[in-house]
Length: 142
Image (cartoon, rainbow, N blue to C red; front, side):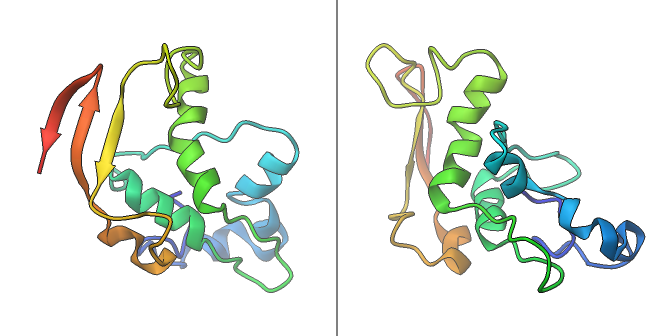
Protein backbone atom coordinates (compact mmCIF):
# COMPACT_ATOMS: atom_id res chain seq x y z
CA UNK A 1 0.00 0.00 0.00
CA UNK A 2 2.83 2.53 0.46
CA UNK A 3 3.77 2.50 -3.24
CA UNK A 4 1.06 4.20 -5.32
CA UNK A 5 1.89 7.75 -6.32
CA UNK A 6 -0.07 10.07 -4.04
CA UNK A 7 0.19 7.70 -1.06
CA UNK A 8 2.27 8.37 2.04
CA UNK A 9 3.99 11.39 0.54
CA UNK A 10 4.97 9.68 -2.71
CA UNK A 11 4.65 12.40 -5.35
CA UNK A 12 2.20 11.87 -8.19
CA UNK A 13 4.68 13.06 -10.79
CA UNK A 14 6.46 11.89 -12.79
CA UNK A 15 5.03 8.40 -12.22
CA UNK A 16 1.36 8.96 -13.09
CA UNK A 17 2.36 10.65 -16.36
CA UNK A 18 4.65 7.76 -17.20
CA UNK A 19 1.93 5.22 -16.42
CA UNK A 20 -0.49 7.21 -18.57
CA UNK A 21 -4.24 7.75 -18.13
CA UNK A 22 -5.15 4.69 -20.22
CA UNK A 23 -3.36 2.43 -17.70
CA UNK A 24 -4.42 4.21 -14.49
CA UNK A 25 -7.41 1.91 -13.91
CA UNK A 26 -5.03 -1.09 -14.04
CA UNK A 27 -2.32 0.39 -11.81
CA UNK A 28 -2.05 -0.74 -8.20
CA UNK A 29 -5.38 -2.49 -8.78
CA UNK A 30 -5.82 -4.15 -5.38
CA UNK A 31 -9.62 -3.90 -5.29
CA UNK A 32 -9.94 -5.18 -8.86
CA UNK A 33 -7.67 -8.14 -8.02
CA UNK A 34 -9.52 -8.92 -4.77
CA UNK A 35 -12.91 -8.70 -6.47
CA UNK A 36 -11.64 -11.16 -9.09
CA UNK A 37 -10.79 -13.65 -6.33
CA UNK A 38 -7.06 -13.01 -5.91
CA UNK A 39 -5.44 -13.16 -2.48
CA UNK A 40 -3.94 -9.70 -1.92
CA UNK A 41 -0.99 -9.69 0.47
CA UNK A 42 0.31 -6.43 1.94
CA UNK A 43 3.86 -5.69 3.10
CA UNK A 44 6.38 -2.91 2.88
CA UNK A 45 9.25 -2.76 0.46
CA UNK A 46 11.67 -1.55 3.11
CA UNK A 47 14.04 0.29 2.81
CA UNK A 48 12.28 1.75 -0.26
CA UNK A 49 9.14 2.52 1.75
CA UNK A 50 8.39 2.66 5.48
CA UNK A 51 8.25 -0.72 7.20
CA UNK A 52 5.43 0.38 9.54
CA UNK A 53 2.31 -1.70 8.74
CA UNK A 54 0.04 0.90 10.39
CA UNK A 55 1.14 3.39 7.73
CA UNK A 56 0.50 0.78 5.05
CA UNK A 57 -2.99 0.13 6.44
CA UNK A 58 -3.69 3.85 6.41
CA UNK A 59 -2.44 4.12 2.82
CA UNK A 60 -4.69 1.24 1.70
CA UNK A 61 -7.76 2.71 3.39
CA UNK A 62 -7.13 6.25 2.09
CA UNK A 63 -6.20 5.26 -1.48
CA UNK A 64 -7.85 7.64 -3.96
CA UNK A 65 -8.35 7.20 -7.71
CA UNK A 66 -6.23 9.46 -9.89
CA UNK A 67 -9.24 10.36 -12.06
CA UNK A 68 -12.99 10.36 -11.36
CA UNK A 69 -13.49 7.67 -14.00
CA UNK A 70 -10.95 5.30 -12.39
CA UNK A 71 -12.19 2.50 -10.13
CA UNK A 72 -11.78 2.84 -6.38
CA UNK A 73 -8.89 0.53 -5.41
CA UNK A 74 -8.98 1.26 -1.66
CA UNK A 75 -9.50 -1.40 0.99
CA UNK A 76 -11.60 -1.30 4.14
CA UNK A 77 -9.84 -1.32 7.49
CA UNK A 78 -10.61 -5.02 7.98
CA UNK A 79 -9.44 -5.93 4.49
CA UNK A 80 -6.22 -3.99 5.08
CA UNK A 81 -5.61 -5.74 8.40
CA UNK A 82 -6.22 -9.06 6.63
CA UNK A 83 -3.68 -8.11 3.96
CA UNK A 84 -1.01 -7.96 6.65
CA UNK A 85 -2.17 -10.97 8.72
CA UNK A 86 -4.32 -13.70 7.19
CA UNK A 87 -3.07 -13.11 3.65
CA UNK A 88 0.56 -12.86 4.78
CA UNK A 89 0.23 -16.24 6.48
CA UNK A 90 -1.30 -17.65 3.29
CA UNK A 91 1.62 -16.31 1.22
CA UNK A 92 4.11 -18.20 3.36
CA UNK A 93 2.01 -21.40 3.40
CA UNK A 94 1.39 -20.99 7.16
CA UNK A 95 -2.34 -20.23 7.14
CA UNK A 96 -2.86 -23.34 9.27
CA UNK A 97 -0.67 -21.86 12.08
CA UNK A 98 -0.58 -18.07 11.69
CA UNK A 99 -2.57 -15.01 10.73
CA UNK A 100 -5.53 -15.44 13.10
CA UNK A 101 -6.27 -15.45 16.81
CA UNK A 102 -7.45 -19.02 17.06
CA UNK A 103 -6.83 -22.02 19.34
CA UNK A 104 -3.80 -23.97 18.17
CA UNK A 105 -2.34 -21.03 16.25
CA UNK A 106 0.87 -19.24 17.17
CA UNK A 107 0.32 -16.60 19.82
CA UNK A 108 1.57 -13.69 17.71
CA UNK A 109 -0.23 -10.41 18.28
CA UNK A 110 0.18 -6.69 18.72
CA UNK A 111 -1.53 -4.60 21.40
CA UNK A 112 -2.19 -1.11 20.08
CA UNK A 113 -2.34 2.23 21.88
CA UNK A 114 -5.92 2.85 20.79
CA UNK A 115 -8.98 1.36 19.18
CA UNK A 116 -8.03 1.13 15.51
CA UNK A 117 -11.70 0.63 14.55
CA UNK A 118 -12.73 3.86 16.31
CA UNK A 119 -9.87 5.89 14.80
CA UNK A 120 -10.55 8.10 11.79
CA UNK A 121 -8.72 6.79 8.71
CA UNK A 122 -6.72 10.03 8.48
CA UNK A 123 -5.48 9.48 12.06
CA UNK A 124 -4.56 5.79 11.86
CA UNK A 125 -0.86 6.72 11.94
CA UNK A 126 -1.37 7.91 15.54
CA UNK A 127 -2.20 4.37 16.74
CA UNK A 128 1.06 2.80 17.87
CA UNK A 129 2.09 -0.66 19.06
CA UNK A 130 2.55 -0.83 22.82
CA UNK A 131 3.20 -4.56 23.19
CA UNK A 132 4.17 -7.27 20.73
CA UNK A 133 3.82 -10.94 21.59
CA UNK A 134 5.46 -13.60 19.42
CA UNK A 135 5.13 -17.28 20.17
CA UNK A 136 3.44 -16.40 23.45
CA UNK A 137 6.39 -14.27 24.66
CA UNK A 138 6.50 -10.50 25.00
CA UNK A 139 9.07 -9.29 22.46
CA UNK A 140 8.38 -5.55 22.62
CA UNK A 141 6.86 -3.17 25.16
CA UNK A 142 6.67 0.59 24.82
